[in-house]
Length: 399
Image (cartoon, rainbow, N blue to C red; front, side, top):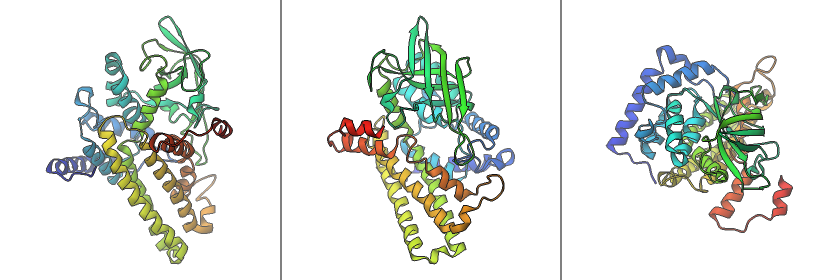
């Protein structure tokens, strides 16, 4: 699949670009570039106000069908939107998890009542979502989930612990993968529940990261409740639906992400020129390889758009995740090597990091979150290439 430069797409690109230029000004002029990895809590209320401004103008959920509040944009137009948003230096989105993960999952697997209840507040940015997947003993090995939910009349009762829950403090709801069949193991007996966060029985504890911020959180469920109807799919469908959500996470928004990566690369290259580090042939070779990797990454991402256009992306999306996470981690390492000894000194006390230090520290997590590199390689080997499954003993040792 290649990006089609048709008159309709050119007109759409111009519409997006003109709106962003006109609206990222005045009241929202200062919002450009706010937030992002390592700066998750920066100007959160301002970014929330900006996103609600976008919603009022019809610029949230652009790829959703019109019947659910979206624009019905084609995959190519969604790519255009995310690219132009990144090029305009739009602030980091606060509604990413609801718009790009939970919303498409509800559209694909939810009931009519669930779509009517949960989709409009996502479009309007009135309810924010977080993802309840990882646990202390079930991170990359998600099938080891131990959080339990029991059905008691008209509600589910949830007990357990989640960890690395992004933006839990700011979220109104969480989609939780939990074990609803007593005695079940691995992929069987899991369900996908929608759980309100603002209730007794939900305890959120921030985790301070290397960057000094705390986007990630621990979440403890101790008798938390949600309505019996707040299950997506049937009991036991949780694994299938959780995997579909991860596929949506690796959708068209990653191409906008790559525009941000290109700007980071150009910043590192400029830093190398300014400091004279570009004279080092080894660093110059790494810069060249980084640029080549950026181009390959984009071509690979565009190629996978055909799968997304056909429906929920398949395991091939793991290739994109593996490629971009490894590339971005290496860019962080390259930035520190370009800085040299100066990269070891903070800009100010007690822990004032510059952009390159923040890039290096945060990018260490890229190969872990949203499915670790080890798991992505297994998915590619087993589900794309058809190779034999990894021996159970090896899986157990890795856990």
